[in-house]
Amino acid sequence: MRVHVDQEKCCGSGQCVLAAPDVFDQRADDGIVLLLDPRPPAGIHAEVRDAAAFCPAGAITVEET
Image: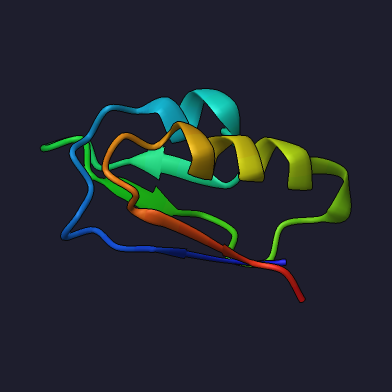
């Protein structure tokens, strides 16, 4: 799995951080998504997929490898 984020699309809702805190964080000043791990371990792939699905702005893309 490879994860991509589009910070231009991000609206700062934080749903990704709630779903997968080991992969996503938010900038302190404006809440925009920060990608912590673009290649997360297999054990949290379901959480990453949930984060992408929950993102109201569609700022997260998951590429299955």
